[in-house]
Image 1 (cartoon, rainbow, N blue to C red):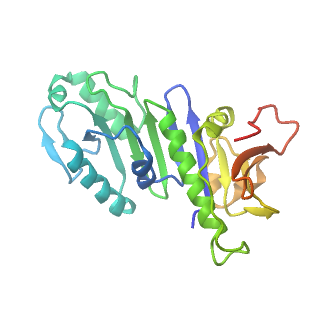
Image 2 (image 1 turned 60 degrees about the vertical axis):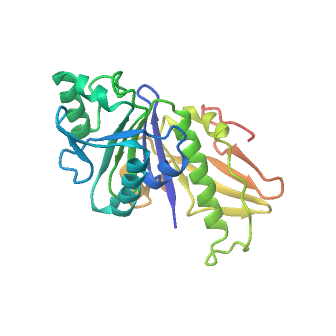
Length: 260
């Protein structure tokens, strides 16, 4: 059962560093489905070898779906890293400099210039590490807010209906709107933790604590993040079937949305 989700959004590059959001979560929620994949691991076993770039590729929808299914099964055994692209023919138009940038990107997970290549027309660059950590570059950042909203909704549903918890069984949860998370843009840039381990029920409200830990991702491994500021709570009201935020620290100078 998921205990937390960590999110840190870089609005300059549209890169999202997260923990608790998996490759499967991405695949199941994304709207702009990848047409082809360029695999950024030179030692990747899957795919077919593309001579010009020296990397493996996955062609067309059926191949991409098969690779995603395989990646979801074996993600604990190694990193998953890929970039989508539109036209296989355009791979042959890449210059040696562009290819070297792709290799650098795959190795360091940081782009030298833009993470979105004109010739490839990619919408994503995806890296998944061990321990449910991902770094994903989104051409359209709204894709991420949709993924996060679906993940939070699913995590709360599982938590409040867990037979081992003190919550009553059979509680239904309406999906959170991604628009509410867009309004959280200012604190998502700072690095926050949604703590599902400490969900509490007050009447018909289910309250999820939100801690700010900035870029200290290591704190999520040993619960040290609970010593950081508890800046807000995400609340689901089962009677009204609505989501909203409540600011927990009056002195905190970042404005939070009030209603779903």
